[in-house]
Length: 133
Image (cartoon, rainbow, N blue to C red; front, side):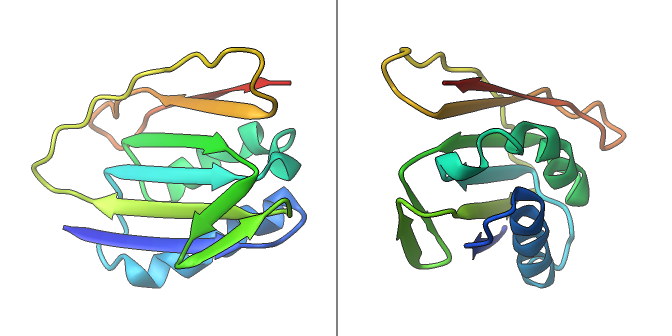
């Protein structure tokens, strides 16, 4: 089992995604993640859904889970009320993971839920994101 994590404080979502992917890559020698967690500040909410596939494809992630929050913790740091994006990946050979989708009540502002379909055996899967304004 291998785990890796990174945190970016980049304002632009594309730059933040690129930064965390580049930080995680050298920490994950297998370059394959069975499970990835992504946490983003609400600053990234609008641009984030279109970049999920980039994160999932980089490490052939079977399951990608994520959410937004006012505070983002990653790589032993916490960022509150500012742009931040954290990624934690896990290489877990022999572990079965089943994803599921959780609906959040509308009173929670800026929630992003992510649901990734299981990998099809060729390293391909899909992810969908739902933002609740």
